[in-house]
Length: 78
Length: 196
Image (cartoon, rainbow over all chains, first blue to last red; front, side):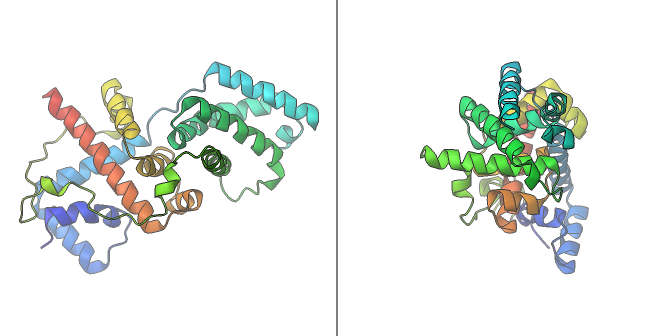
């Protein structure tokens, strides 16, 4: 059976569906039997998904104003 | 696009509103110096305006802007003789994602991972404390990991796009991403433990 240490390394390959059938089954068997790894993998996934929900930073007003100024310069050259 | 090419200020403002924040975030990922990052963002927008005809619509507009920004950041860093996250990206990445000292000799975890009081991604990102912990942990990541996890998980780019953007192999991209995620999960776990 795979160890927790191996699960921790293989989790990324597993998540991308890159494990072959036998390895995938071994991974799933371990997760089925090991609550500790189930929690760890679940939290790893929650963390990755949370990153995608972070609010986008706002552009500072000065930078936005500078961009518009440079846009006008670009337009004048067209 | 046609309006932009015609010099429509409102079209440009809308575009900056849509992608400006993400470009700045990526620039500060590549170049830690905030003022240099802002300059590179400005250069990126001008280069994008000059190169509008070169946008073929194969990638999303944002990915196209990101690629311009990555090139500009790379050139800027080379010109100034700075080290850049990219410098580490071509190297082979090895070693374990999780610190080996966290496992017993038989390969089992030493610690028991407790469930978190909050594991919902949306609420983790929205909670002031958890969001601050995530952002601080991202900022503390080594450059290459920070660049990969920002592009993949924060911006949602595909692995192949990231490899093109950063000049990485798929394997290295995956290893860097996994390590980054492990560290960020650990930061959140420590926050939860501290709250107990």
